[in-house]
Length: 610
Ligand code: AGP
Image (cartoon, rainbow, N blue to C red; front, side):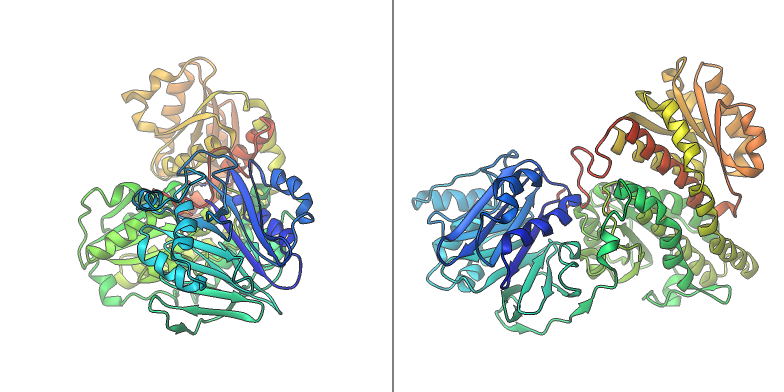
């Protein structure tokens, strides 16, 4: 949600800011803008509701805006509707100071009333404008000093990018609870919400911490802490390439990312398997703590939560310890029962999801140990958790997660196997067998991905259904949740996932002739029961698309209208394969319906509001 880009150097800033904003489009936005300083023209501002293209047309691709220092922003509306006036950057009353902001200023009303009483006139409904106006209120010739005063006054979350016409050779940035990355170039410096915006220009970055303020100049970047003391930032090199964040010939990022899953899975899993054992070198948990674990929570949102649902089934089987899976937005208000023998595992692709971050903080407050499974290196959740396991999936641009889901799943599985090793709850031979099967998963994924045409054909048969049900039991139910979310978020088809045994307790009343039911029946121990549920819905007129393994395909085919079969694997790993055709089905249905697949309506990639 919302994206910030900043640049100071010797090239024209506007085209570069537009290019950076284009890379941040995936985060979700409804308007965009930029402010660039030029010695002749002063601060030039352009902003517009709608897609970035609207802004780009207004400024002729950046050519009509002059200057080599500026900030840009994509806004996802929270305070004030999407409109030109509410778009960022916001200017102070005199037009001297421009501000872009991600986050929410919680006490903005009180500050707005105070400034209004002092004669300041506001031009938008946003919380951000108070930052620009307050900066000017405090400004006495030194923008850094004014920024510190503002930071002491505002409450809430923020990533700020500031340009001041009186201090044109610097940009100022500040962060609290909203990410900001600093980029180091030759004779230039960059600022961005995430590295995708600056990877084309530099791979040398550092991540701002909460409470830090940065001054960016053409000669470098100096960072200060809350007390204005200089901070020596650790620089890191981004280890992926610009091509990872481009479509590379694919029509959509989502499809590219689906196809990248075998490789992403290899990268996430294989280095952590050594001599038939799981080795999590980056895991920072004492073995004694693991042995004494009384309860594990898995807490996350959306698809990451669905990984947790699979994880509950897997880990309870492996560990014989209670594993609770909780939606992050519910967890902290539910009086969770955690103590020093509890582990709270939070899962997040972006590492910035506010609900997940809040749950993590609550878990820490209650005395639990926390472990984060995160994709984005250096993200806020990764920094705050006691221990981090990265998924190493590379940048995921499509709003609908695919490769991040698959890598989260295998990392959580490896975590469960590691705990089983330490606790001694699974025989070593079984652990070795699961690890052997994990090594085969990428090739089996490739087999499924070589038959996309079959799934495309099914999608062409079913894309005009307006309501689709997913049913399954146990791990198949967990898969249904993810299949259903994928479908609804990108195709806008109403869809629900039910535990198949629950059908007769209510949902079956919705089945009528022609209703499409996707029956997941990959888990052999419950296959017979799955078949009974398929017969139940068939006898009420449903059209059934079945999903099972090669071994059981012939039997399920007798009861379904169409069938997708996936390779057999260890039962604990079935979800890693079953999810792939479900992703493809959602993708092709959305394609048939002409939906904006990579940027579905109303959704953002990283959800940084509660
Ligand atoms: C998945 O396709 C969704 N876009 C969404 O449910 C997502 O998984 C959720 O918002 C959590 O995001 P996170 O993994 O970045 O925390």
